[in-house]
Image 1 (cartoon, rainbow, N blue to C red):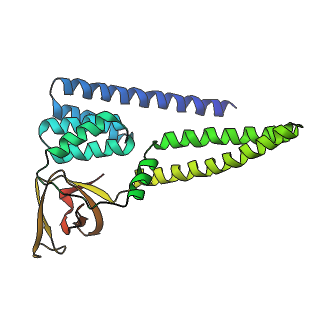
Image 2 (image 1 turned 90 degrees about the vertical axis):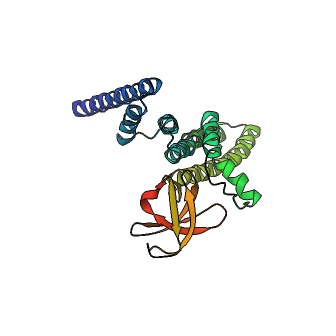
Length: 251
């Protein structure tokens, strides 16, 4: 028992220390940002990310720092990472729109099927924690329905709890499926941002290959393949080409 209590105490202390370090670096970063010492602010925010914490607010502030430095590619990269964690945040969406407006290339995406767009909006309606909470609440309602069915001896209440339980099972399965979809979305590494000021896309993963097109920083692309240091990208308008891996960062 003493060992269990000791382990719990160590865990609590570790969490408190982690929270303290996070708040300390986050405060430092904010202070540096207000003083326009953007490089120091970037270092503070990166320390948080390197510690293992992935937060929308950290990526958002990091994006702001890069935006102020004029590094549009890295600004959009971090705004996209923030939006991936918190897609409904108005500030993130606003800053991302401003940053995208300043990109040199204006790539017109191929329209997707409207049902796919609605499905994506539904998946992104809640964060991972949001869908987790929703699933847990529905699960509690399911348990309550089962309890009422077996405890109550009134036919009316049993019938009502049975119907409620049936629909609760359906909603629970749906919420768990949506949670799974949201986790997959968050772990998806098939999208990237061009961070180099200018990149020449090749027809093949070879410096001697002919040029396919020229693309500039800040453009969002789909990552289709990797060969050594080369990455095959696909633009939103359907164009494909190979760029050096140092010119692109995964969202």
